[in-house]
Image (cartoon, rainbow, N blue to C red):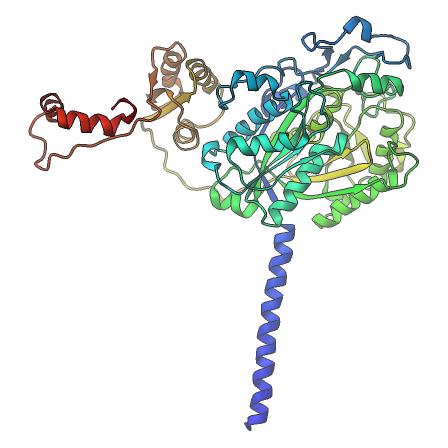
Amino acid sequence: MDAQVEKVVNALRKSMLDNEKLRQQNAKLVADATEPIAVVGMACRYPGGVATPEQLWDLVVDGRDAIGAFPTDRGWDLDGLYDPEPGTPDKSYTREGGFLYDAADFDADFFGVAPRDAVAIDPQQRLLLEVAWEAIERAGIDPASLKGSRTGVFTGLMYHDYGLGSSDGCLVCGRVAYTLGLEGPAVTVDTACSSSLVAIHSAVQALRGKECNLALAGGVTVMSNADMFIYFSGQRGASADGRCRSFAESADGVGCSEGAGLILLERLSDARRNGHNVLAVIRSSAVNQDGASSGLTAPNGPSQQRLIRQALAAAELRTADVDVVEAHGTGTRLGDPIEAQAVLATYGQDRDEPLYLGSIKSNLGHTQAAAGVAGVIKMIKAIEHGVLPRSLYADEPTPQVDWSAGNVALLADARPWPAVDRPRRAGVSSFGLGGTNAHVIIEQASAEEPTERTPVSRVLPWIVTGKTPEALAANAVGLSSVDASFADIAYSLAATRTPFEHRGVVVASVRESAAAGLASIADGTNHAVARAQGLTAFLFTGQGSQQIGMGRELYDTFPAFAEAWDAAIAPELA
């Protein structure tokens, strides 16, 4: 081969290698941009006394209604506020909604907040602090271990009405990041009713873009005043009894409610590698805008259709690949028919089995900036249990919709969600008052290969801790209802919980034998207080151990040794 031919061959070889390298790089970029995002933790507060995702599931699967009377501890003029006549200025013709009646409660000492400062902090910030801590802990991660980590916080918020001057939106995400020491992006989103779902979309994008390794995402709503009830009453858009009758013939308007919810997200590959339990997977998400529609606050059907198709395309799914849509479904005579028709025109086409349609707003009311994440938590629990809960008030569908235009069925009754040859999938929708729409497709996580384990009966410790004696007792009581294996609980308590000052330990081999020990922690008889600054010291004699208590005799005999020992084991007492 002459030199010229060899030069050409080498150039071609290099070009082919470069092309292959570019192909691999492009494939990695595409994979990173579309990697499924794992939900590894969840926590929430919603009306009806809901304080956990499990309680939220119980509420919806039991078909309960969480709507109640206006709260009496917020300084509202309840008698002067009410007027049954729609349209009366500065009045509300409804006096019910979905409320967090304990929204003012806050364990300030737990988060190192002075009592005077705690009163000044917007209750929305306080709620999110508690829910953030719980979401991380429920993922099997010690929240204290995330200090300095690239963990993001993406929060939906639409109210800035707390009267003590701490309602700036930036402080909602900022307070969580500051308190937990998180150094990823911290962003507050205000797109009104779609805020929490847009926040989840933003968190997904940030994780795929490697801006953070974990992300808290969701939203919060606490109404410090009654302005929203007055607004919707003035528009004649409020439900007379505060209930959202989603897609029902009896729908008469929106019922305003409160809530808080966060999910902890992680790239699926990282979650698997880190051994985190994957509750579900976010397959895709999409956000768009109504644009120049018929009105600033009027929903836009074609935009909603484009949104759904955008989410399906991003997930590379067909309409028939999604089983259920958790709808926005506010119960208004304008919005519900538009949304239903958009679902019929998209998910309702090209499928043999019906697309099931429901909304958690029929149970909770419209929790506004916390609404989308409530639907996400509901669908994740539905995937887990294989059940589609019924949507209240849906026995008689609204006649304003041509339900024959597509294969869509309202969830007037609960239905089993059977396992098939693909993952269970759900779409979740949220539409903002200003026209910003969001849709998320959630998917059942693939089962991991089971690890062969030899059954073994061994004694293990359950280490229970709390910042106060009361918290220690409450944690001991709470353990009695945890649904997990004895060994898994022992591991989680030892390896994934912050070791607070007040502690108790139960040593047993089975759950039943731990009951007495937990009771002794709860009543205070099994209780130790660790010195916050205490250290552990060991004395090595260099000669073996000739007699028990050699170190104590040394301590009692030589003051210099005693002083050095005290400095090592308890420097604050030295």
